[in-house]
Image (cartoon, rainbow over all chains, first blue to last red; front, top):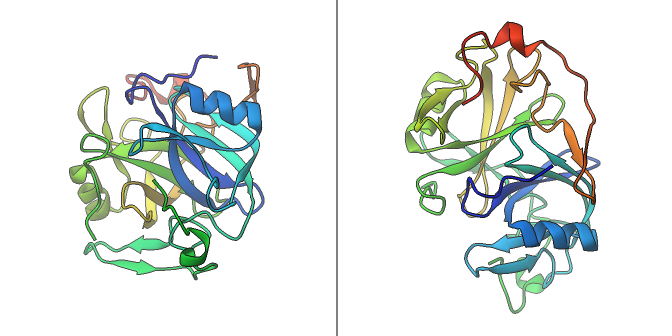
Length: 129
Length: 129
């Protein structure tokens, strides 16, 4: 099956889901090379839109995402990667999931999770790109 | 909090997750108007990239997505909408989730779910845009 990388300019959105809790941890993007590298290594590799390069999740923090299953949607233009996360959390702000805020209808947000690590100690040299 | 619609040309990717099972049902896109309409009506409204217009999920099938919570990620450029789905499934191919196929490392796919409705009977006039 051919993944449709063309709809979003060579990229597909990739949902990262914890295989055990089914929590959605983050959303990233992959190009064909990132998907190939993810499949070759068994660890999630994204394409960083800001740095315009491949980006292994956890390369600086050690919080790698071990791939358990890759699913593809009906139109083959989005991926769902079920993972075993290494480390306490995936978010560069110190949370288990990047989706740690609830958006209210008035546009305000509310933090709905607890910090699980101190990002200052983990990301010494580099923030999430 | 301002949602960052600019990174993907006026759109943000939106993950739809079943509030009870935590299954990821589909991924769509919203522009600012789609998000406003989603929040106003309490039912998911996407922006259709192929039709270039707002698209209420379920408008033809009746399989609406009732919004239970909207979450936003750390960079405010992706949304996670937890929903109560109306109807047996969200996928225009008759499955509960659009992510009904597993992608193998050789590029082949394997169907990992069962059809829950007959799309020919539901989508009489219109397929998913």
